[in-house]
Length: 427
Image: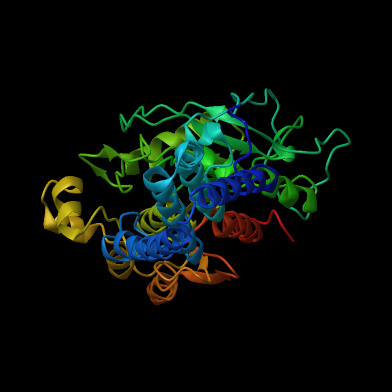
């Protein structure tokens, strides 16, 4: 049951049909009250529109503006709930019975429609925060290849797997003492053969918010399928992709700094690389490592790319912000930096870029969705600051993309290919 696909039209369309049928039955069963039904529908739709505007635009409860799908479905759900109220107040037994059923049907239909628009929870297990990603079986090759992989001299062996391998691993916070949840990892086919070559590494970070976890990258972003396709086009070559937990829990935001909310920066720059290099035939030079992420993870990529070019020579920022932030500036300084305004200012990545320029060996891939009105305008500002600091910058706007996992999946995968060209995995 927990694997029920919540984004599938085969699941959603029957649910919508049942919900609509319930509303029609309530309306038909309320005798001589069609005028009340019409008023309820109009009033509910207007209330939904106002509610969407107030919660999404005024209070900004989710940190991103509502999409048109969010706004329409908020109106639809409120209209359906208004019909249910009329049925409960003015209807007889049949109308009241179906009206009771209409309430959860309307709420679930609206919630799943919004979820499908964002692409956040592909299954019930994802919505419950339960990852069904199995433990990763690491390759056991006592005789790894002698040097970093290069597409110009790579000859795939006859037993090259058709797909990469992914799974969960535990990366302890040995130095940082950061209590991270299990990380996920994807190994390309080239990492699974005897005498596997040394491979570059991409650290890929999810966003932050309800349900946020490394599994979002694989499940909502469909990253394993996307990476398999990348590897197929390049004869089994691709970077090792590790997806660590930079949050400790979904609603926590350590902001990829070391502070009272967790030593996330040290975890990502010391504990994660040390574990990867100890367990896999991975590159050691920072020029062959990239940090990437979506939303809050994209902000982290900007921060770590600017602050630790020795560790991450490349960074991939998808729909990130200008810098670390919680609810607002004062809240960020108070909770994230122990009230230290100077530490907060010093952690701003655009300031770091300006103060530590030039970055002659760094490169950045910066992307957002074309319809992302909140974070899309951040791209040119970050790109301009990075270029001014000497970073080689590539910008990408994802057509028909908002602040969602469609944009994230497309841009993160394209960022991996961009990084492959930088590290000679792609010709």
